Image 1: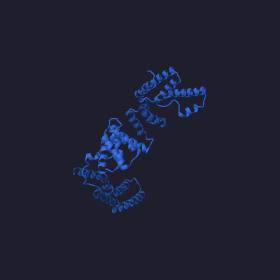
Image 2: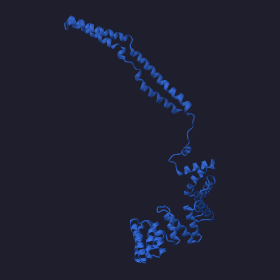
Image 3: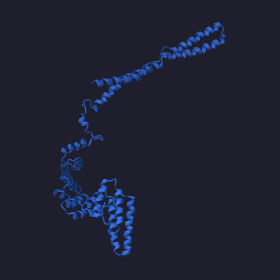
Length: 367
């Protein structure tokens, strides 16, 4: 209530400051100052005639002109329009002082909410804006899903967030609900399988494997499902099957696939070569060549690979292919040189260096 009173005083003070000058009249005109001046001039003319400063004809002309001006001023003073303007300004000031607040209050009460209580901080934290923490946002979605448990889109949104926060039980439940209420898809099945693997500490359980197989039934090229089925084969002791799955993925993958590094590392781990030194098309073309031409073609391709690796040394798979190619060609010195160059190229990346060393050990190249 005190705040309302302060606001009212501030409003009144502002209105008075603006309208007070408008309510003041022109005292000079109200006092008839102009007519008094002309009367003084007539008196001065009479004194000048008595003193002999002006002759009578000039005095008569001056009296006529001053009298004319005096009459005009006297007529204006009888009904001054300015007095009317002053009254109008005073009326306008009163209307502004009383009318504007009255109109504002009359509009606010039907349109505003003067009786609305304070907005608690707990509710303010639920206001959707860009400054909220992830925990607050998750809590909002959870409250929404508690009221709308069949919202498949909501479960799809919150499931990966649960997984990222380490709430794996909730992630599995959310992925299941996403499938139940939004329908089955390869991505949803593979995501559920991945969550089950994470919940089992990295082990591809029978339940998780079943989800990956369902994903492949919906999309044979699903990357996540293929990778984890290869991992399942590795964990079951079937390294050759795992290598076959992962090698097939690499052969079909684009060169810039973001998951290539992961699959290459897995393939090296089970003792498989990341990729053949020559593509299938090159191998087919080489069958019809003479031994000399075939050797020249292979050396040309190996040289191009070595040149490319000098420009971009981050390609661990390429280094392993180069070392393997030199070994196949019987050039052990070049194989050792290439392995040394490869270690220098990836020395600042521990993950790539470990992958390279594992691959070189599988190829039989000593560090």
